[in-house]
Every structure is written in structure tokens, then in C-alpha cells.
Length: 184
Image 1 (cartoon, rainbow, N blue to C red):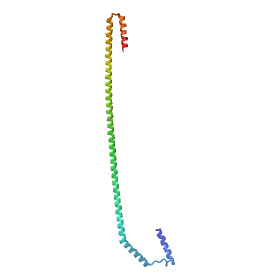
Image 2: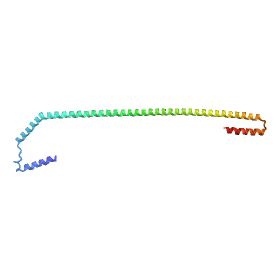
Image 3: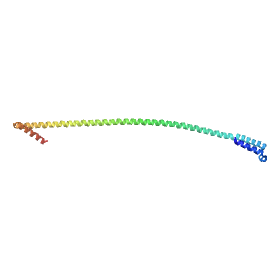
Image 4: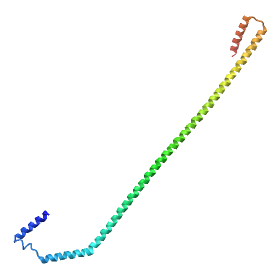
């Protein structure tokens, strides 16, 4: 607005000064022809050029709208794929957790079986050892009884060979014990 006021005031100054009038003259005929030419060019451009430009712009707008729709469609597809990926990831995690749980359960069962088998074997070995010890003990008792009976028989034979007194009996038993220890 200020520019317009400055231009108008400049024109008033020039119009007031009559020496510039022949140089800056306004010819009404030229002004009408110029306006007529401008209007004719406008209608020609409107008829020939604006229609084509408008078609090009409409076509371009349609292409841009299609691109926008494709972009929105691609975004929706990407979101759907992302959702599907997240669901499959969650599913894979739950499957992995389930596999880990079953593996841990199986390994615990296997460990329990191994411990139970080892305990059974240890019990079996312990029972065998006790049985062997009992057999050895029984054998030792039988051997001891046999030796005692041999000693008694030997002592009896010595006593029968000669009639001895109480002092002789003690001495004889001590000799028997010493001689039996030497035999072992």
C-alpha cells in the first residue's frame, strides 16, 4: 500500500511538471489496443493453453493422489507386516520358552533316573558287601569252631595218655594254646 502511494505521488509530481508530459504521454488509443491485445491473448491462452495446462495439472494431481494412496497403502501393509512379525516373534518366544521348559523337565527327570539307578547300584553293591562280610564272618566262625574242636580233641588225647593233676592240666592247656598259635 505504501508503495502505491509513493508511485502515485511520483506521478503527480511528473504531471505537475509540464516539461515531462511530451515524454510520458498517455495515448488512449494505444491503451485500448494494448488492453484489447491482452484480452485477446488471454482468451487465446485460455482456449489453447490453459485447458492443456489444466489437464496436465489435473493429471499430475491424480498421479500425486495415487502416489499418496499407494504410500498410505504401503504404510498400512508395513504396519500389518510389522504386527504379523511381532506376533510371530511373540509366538517364537513362547515356543522357545516351552522348549526350554520341556528340556529342563526332561533333563531333571533324566538326572533323577540316573541318581535312582546309581542309588540302586550302590544299594546292590552294599548288600553284596554285607553278604560277603557275613559269609567271611561265618567262615571264620566255622574255622574257629573247627580249630577249637581240634584243640579239644588233641587236649583230650593228651589227657587220656596220662593221668595228670590240676597243675599238669593248666600247663598242658597252655602248651596247646602256644602250639596252636605257632601253627597259624
